Image 1: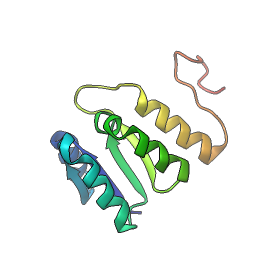
Image 2: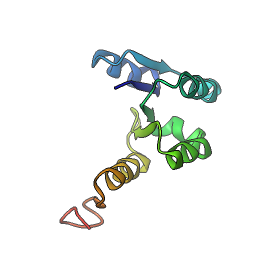
Image 3: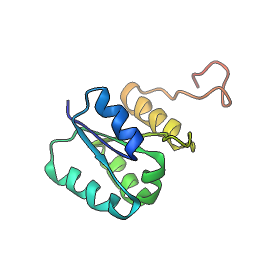
Image 4: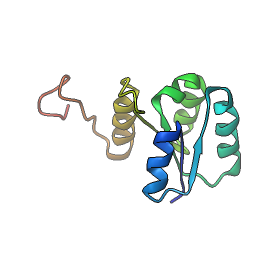
Length: 112
């Protein structure tokens, strides 16, 4: 499975240490160009992107999610979660498994 990480230097370094080879440390000015490059190669099945950078590409990210491929997973960066990461993972689980998983604030049992 081909996974590509797009994010700040610290996040990318962590994923590289975990064995991910396709990882781009970007700045806000180059994020759209990097995403285009990753999408055009056609090899990436999962894109892991920090919430902060995904916010700059929200319209593009939503279009990719609607298509269903590649799968986009938003993760918090060093500044902590902004809320999109949990929502993104919940949507992936719902599509894959067919049930909606809620967080502790939404439902103490975790399953709706």
